[in-house]
Image (cartoon, rainbow, N blue to C red; front, side, top):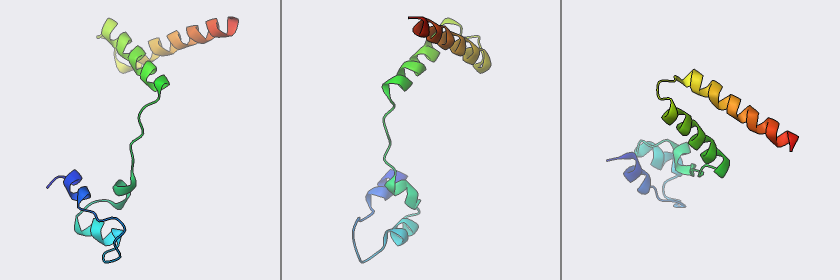
Length: 84
């Protein structure tokens, strides 16, 4: 049985078995029961697209070179933004 299937078996708000015991019996971390994923912000998506564009243009760059290129383009954008 997968972890998501086991999580669906948890009965919320029952007094018969506390959440800690249910999680222990189903071999599920209790903290994972309360986690709700947050979608990425629009800024984060734009940054990831820019990094992807750099990699697409120069796939032979390593992660360090991509980061240097990315930071230099961000710095150019900031300088232009401050000047305006």
